[in-house]
Image 1 (tube, helix red, strand yellow):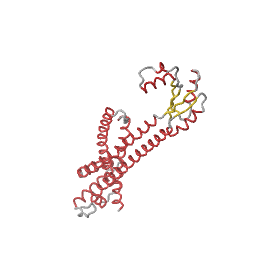
Image 2: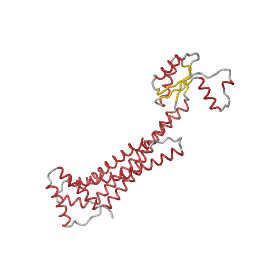
Image 3: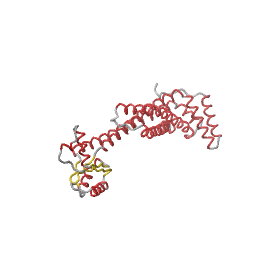
Image 4: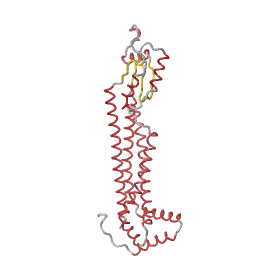
Length: 323
């Protein structure tokens, strides 16, 4: 049956109970007493409509789990993009013949350049050993070559991969720097990829959060609409809008908080288990550790659950109180 279907007129007994509740709260003049009475009415409403409240809370749990899962996915996508961008570096080759003091001066100048996050000198000996390891040469390459042909260099990590060209141009102007390379085509593709990943993460989180909000608000509105006779009776016996609104909004807050609690347990256990398995089987996939992401994500889940529970009740009541 539709929720908008007409209902039978309330009995005199029901009206009398409602009038008694209104009178009891009116006699409690203090604000503390009125607050206690509102709490009692909210608890009574939940007991009388336990099945409906359980169904609404279960629906809210699903919606919050979807929204919370979307936030976790989005945060990990952003983290992955940051990790990829963090691997972007500039290599500045130094001129031959620089003394150790001059090399340190060049390093200091590069470190102080705009957009530079870190810089470290790689001397020609270390560069030759790296080349040997990468080629898998069993014997020392220094024994095969009359001299080391590789120059000293400085490896530079930047703060923003999207502005690596500006950083490289500034480093190129430093005295003692012979050449600067940073793999332009690869960096351009990487920056485009990380921007797309960040955008996708934001869109996923926003869409899932919007869907969850709509589901929660409509669920709370349906529970309020199903109790429209109770609202009409309270209005008939002289209850003020604030008198009626208080218990319903407390019930919405309680349902939202209960759903947030269940969702927090599910997401916390689920993400911790997933992160542990991924770390063991796919160590190259950098998921955020639970302690780094769960407090913020679950905090948002609690805020959403309680706020939307209260807001959904207020929206559902508006049409009946206005009428």
